[in-house]
Length: 333
Ligand SMILES: *[C@@H]1O[C@H](CO)[C@@H](O)[C@H](O)[C@H]1NC(C)=O
Image 1 (cartoon, rainbow, N blue to C red):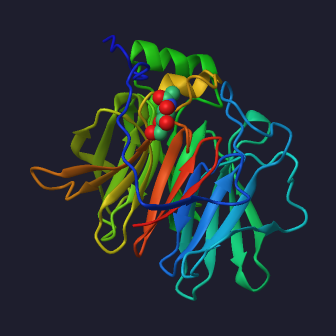
Image 2 (tube, rainbow, N blue to C red):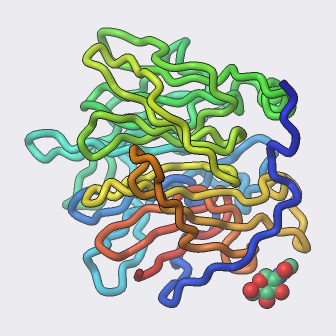
Image 3 (cartoon, rainbow, N blue to C red):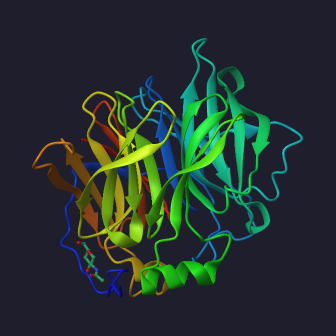
């Protein structure tokens, strides 16, 4: 099956503006994924070096920023990472937090050191704004992880694309419509593929009742709703088709709404042309399980403000929009 225009290369978008937005100071080289704790602390991964996509600081290691969204005028602070962790090759991609019963905050970070894939586990130490590196997960089934959603202090679901294992293969998938991308469940006891047949499984997240897993298929322009079973297997419930390239998904813990950072014209991510900047678009999906989910374009920009949005995350009327390699936007809704 040859699907054309998988990258939506030519789509131009009408702007949708929000009144109270500002670019976040200090974040200049990407804000690929954002995860907000129930208490309003937002973690932001920055500095991803993607094969084929521009980086404003190709030699600078990646960073994790923290923003306290309870503050009146929140600012991003770089988290210090404990000694012993190889910072020079730190190339952070998707992130996910897990809060344990004793309120310990764990941060899972997909990492691509030397173009390989690992998942790094950190403990967040709030007292001195640092991350203590606890362990590195590696596995043959974690081939080229894009995003993860934590299920416990040492277990998670991960989406595999082929960016970092085989860039050529990824382009074949894109243009020929091969569906070789999957979702893997990882725990110390068991690692297994739990869903397959995606063009390029990207963002992954979980519903507030923890019954459903949402997977964004970036090149198939859709979001899959999967039911999670006691043995961690996933079965397909429904697919919501959208007219844009869906990247990371985040869930409003109060409403269950899904917020998505999208690439309205994906090919421009690869152009590196000031006359043809990659645009940004944020969608909100309400009631995805109902017959007629409501899809709202909350924000859209042609790249003059924000280039290549990859994630949008909300906390109590505040919205953070992250990007693959550009800046990050803070908005009061
Ligand atoms: C992008 O949008 C801005 C503001 O809406 C506008 O001023 C600018 O001309 C647009 N640029 C392009 C290339 O369309």
